[in-house]
Length: 541
Image (cartoon, rainbow, N blue to C red; front, top):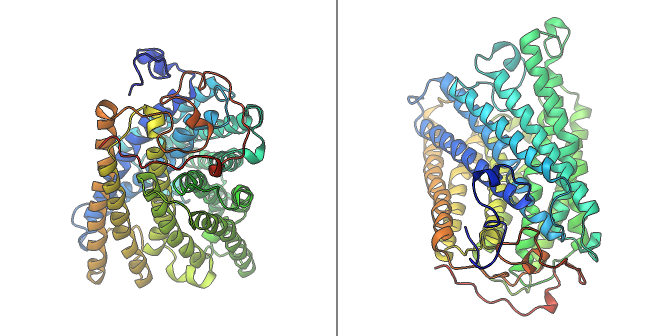
């Protein structure tokens, strides 16, 4: 990565590994996160490949049931805690949020660096637990399995996740203080980019929810070591208490994954349709509404736990409420596209893919919020398909869309447009071929977490495994052409897309303090009516 040799930017301002490991520049810390989460994504992805290879045949002839349990447990832990949750906030949020509001850095640069170290320490500890046997509890750590019966490295993994949780909390705190205190002159709350609103809502969840799951997992470790009687009925505890604590965070955690992705979508849809976003205020407030109502729906994960019918009905009603702000966003993005001057650049392809995938994930979420349907498909592959559509398909579409959109700004280089479009198409096809058959498998009754299954389910499983192969190839392509662009890509202009926002008013890559002169905001976000039409970007081919 390099800018103009004659210009000083955050990449060439200082050299040596020490200048990176001790940096307080939010942009460099964003790059450090990018490297870290990419490693964990590759590890989690390789485990997914092994899982789908096992499920290509019904006999369970590749792994034993114990190894299979450890495999999907570590896949889930790595993907959720060390990729999906931190991906957009830690990488794109860290890099872009201060620039978007016209600030020189985050409010607490040293704490920002500390957050990255906590994330890496937690990730390495978790990976060490994999190398020393892994765990077989499932990523949910349900008791009494995790406290009394699991044979793996539960304590080490729990401590790793506990430490990484502090990274999430500190990042959220940093974002909130920065947004409140460091906005450029003229940048009122309702001139903020919707990407910033989405991260503000996400930070609220991180601060309020993460301590709960961190304490719950810490209690699992204490119960396992000292039998203190929090979850074990033999000592007066309640195993269902863990599920309440776990899902109180882990359902809002879904929104930690999807809200930043929604923020990216708002930026992409407006930039590539050359229109002011439709219903700005509704989209902004819908992020906050999701953050609040997301804390009230954890009980829909526990319909069959023995909770009362009245409690189930209340949680079902609240779950339906979450669909409203999510639908508001989709309707407003669609209205923004209507009669827009749409340019099908790679980021826009990911945006359209996101809307399609999220619609399926969201609508099946409404189905699962319904008591009768959830009981029928509970713990089947229908659940697996649903949460992959929301947490993997939608969240990763948003992440990749944002990464392509801001890649020229981050690196100062353009990527290969032809191959990036091919990759977006392959990922969309591969994802749907992998996970849509799992809705059918689940509806037909195939349980999740089983490594052997009746032969009647094999056709759908083979189709799903074939899709996973296509998806893996699709994910490999960006690794190749993005790395290629660092050396051979054309030099990026300051604003290659003709987009609105303060980040496009600084050079690519940005200078150390983000702007040569402090910016003053004089117009609303997405005022595309005042700009010249965008030109088709074909550089980098």
